[in-house]
Length: 358
Image 1 (cartoon, rainbow, N blue to C red):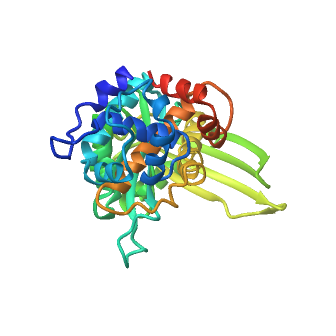
Image 2: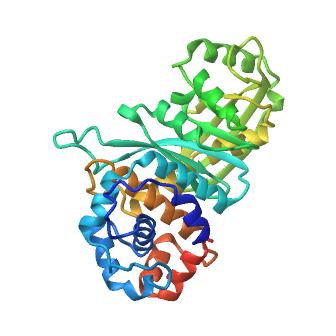
């Protein structure tokens, strides 16, 4: 609780000075509720009433359990930027030194849209430390501008020794420089939205010795047989911040014995990776989809959330990520769903989850 308090206590309380419940205690109770399966502010209030004696082992709650209106008012009014900065600081203390691949990708909150604008839900940019299996950053994509959201999220982080990966939307000089400023290297997907860079990368790779390719597979899994090949060559005559190499990754796939078209992807690299490492980096990037976004939707029911007003969708999304990090880092075995159920059933297990946050 000491580290939690040190990181989150600097947030400014958006309520009047005579508010009865302490802001830090409200955030802590909300986190504990989500660890036990709470989906919204109504659930959080019900959890606080049911677990009041248990919660008072950790926080004071001098004025009893907070109501639904209290939770709703706080999360609607709380400024998300300081909350996200505190989250990044807490996660850095929680995770220690990061290494390996850090993936960036956007995710829509399907239920968080203004009336009549269902096709344009709130859009967040998530930053995922793949090896640590932790969410380390979140930022709103302002006006659904995912590039700006990613740059703002990265500006909060120190990523010395990591490799930041992102899709072709982020293959821009300003994003590359933002990544370099964090102390990290980059591996950015390159497509036709950068035609000059793509043509030069293709020419360099076409002239390279194909015997330097690294091969992976073929391996069978998920009803398909898949193999990959990667080639990396030093970059020449390409104007891009920190650029050191270009890479090509080919994916060969067969389903039901019938080959599918070869998928060819190109990358800009700020460090000369070996072809074998390039294969690992390219594949690891996609864990942000199946280990973060899919889990948020299936285990924590993020897409089903109906919170829409003011800052509530963004702030509650951060609470879910904080809960997911806590569940993931607990040493007991079991799926995320199983751990959520155990936390709701077993107060000893819930206390160990909260204690594991340091």
